[in-house]
Length: 121
Image (cartoon, rainbow, N blue to C red; front, side, top):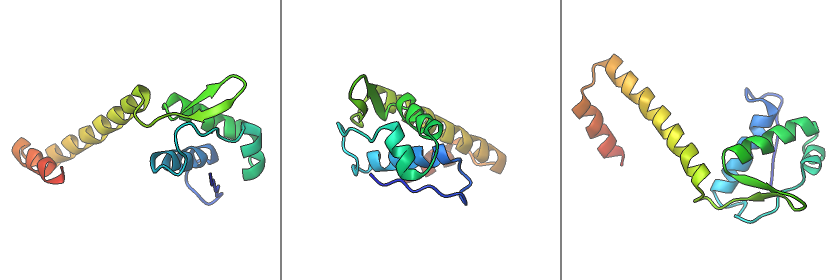
């Protein structure tokens, strides 16, 4: 697992950690069942506070990417778990809602929007 934090980024450091770990979980670089470094270990490796890494792990757990297991640490969950699916569905709905609003503003008909969606699929 590789996590690089930057003070130049617009994202807060905990979000940088979360997003990099999410990306690696989704692309398979960190496979399901992998035990992640402890919060303290990751904080030390990245040079950030324990509070920052705790927030990143907490967010990943809430989003269904990892689970904390007493005595074992944080473990990467399979990509097909229900919580992760619900989070993806929520994000898809938000993006589609933005697309619908934008199409209304631009005067694009429902049929045109459906055609665009079909083309993308």
